[in-house]
Image (cartoon, rainbow, N blue to C red):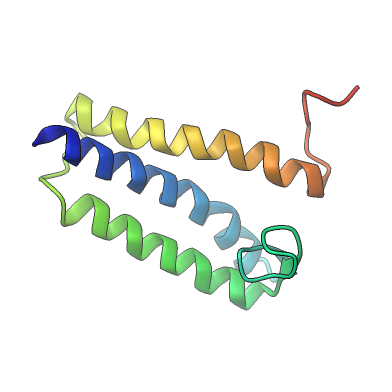
Length: 109
């Protein structure tokens, strides 16, 4: 069923986008919000925890795009599904993390 493949690729895109900030902050040696911090998703975790979380996210991406269907980045449906997942969670995370890190929140003056 191709729609299940598209759903898996969408989820893969979401995990790929989520890996980016954790990887960047982790490799830069900076603390950053993570699901393991207190309070969850608000407090900051060490750079090591963020690197581990980024690598876990990337492993999940690999599972979604290589073990479900036959992912082909040149296939418009596959690429669109992955890209929409990446954009969806990317915009959500920009809003969420922007509240804590001085991001540009369109709701603020």
